[in-house]
Image 1 (spheres, rainbow, N blue to C red):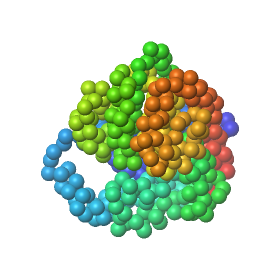
Image 2 (spheres, helix red, strand yellow; image 1 turned 90 degrees about the horizontal axis):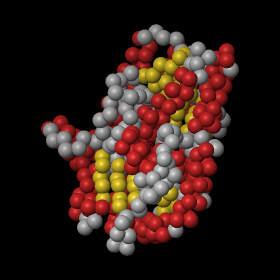
Image 3 (cartoon, rainbow, N blue to C red; image 1 turned 60 degrees about the horizontal axis):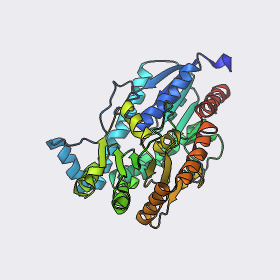
Image 4 (tube, rainbow, N blue to C red; image 1 turned 30 degrees about the vertical axis):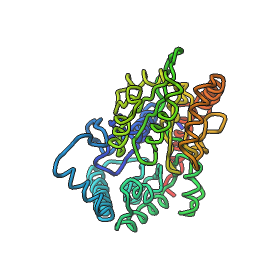
Length: 397
């Protein structure tokens, strides 16, 4: 393996709006973690696009100008057209990135692409530069795009064609879960060289507050399928019986204004903290004081970064029951919300964990064991670097 060191690896995400330096983005944190591991193992890593740090929230809160309001109006009244225009813009951005990379006339020994909507950049570069390609595939792109924008797109066929070409051309594919691997098998008839590597960003070891009050929390994106509103309603349902319980909601997203309204109108508003994004120091303090971490909802393919954060920080977990999350955690490690009755199930689980300290400790211990073994940084990054070594050694297929 030593003979492979000092090889040059291009790590790309074909979107000019993306920045590897954006500490608010789970994808940025994930890719930065992988890039750092490659560098520490002796590889020369080139990241693209090379944007300046961008720590702005993904949702513009309180911004009121003609351009932003026009986009919102178009998205609400003509979502199909809005989605098509957005998809066309992203496809064009990917083509420009491909041209920019080729213009640099750099030599690479491997390309790693985190696949995004409409991109064939990695596949095209592989064929032009004659180097192997690894695709990191975190979602079914047409489905994810429709969820994010509320409609399918008139560019759907181009989106599907790009996804198909990228995955078919890949020498290795990395995905987050067995469920996503099954999707790739079924839709693209690909069965070999697919590796499951969960999306984990390891943090510095926390010292949990042993005098934690009954703090309940959510950390992540305020998206409709994350059902943060259900958590607010569940807290309201149990708050009278637990007068010392508090709720902290950390993050931003499309549902921000909706959640903010629910909090402001709640009779328990003084006990609910809506923080927005916070820096790492503040987040560490919040997690150290958190007794229960909740992931109220997710789509089937989502691999929520926050669940690993909760487990790592010795926080008891209540989470949505989806195929991907069930791949990653067991009933011994988390409490699963009944998808047929989200609110009642969440309320019941909150009461159970608030009342039963022994159950909390057993769950925390089980989740901690998993984080220290198969989900440990050393184990996961060892697997990742083995994939890199094997792909470079094997060359293009």
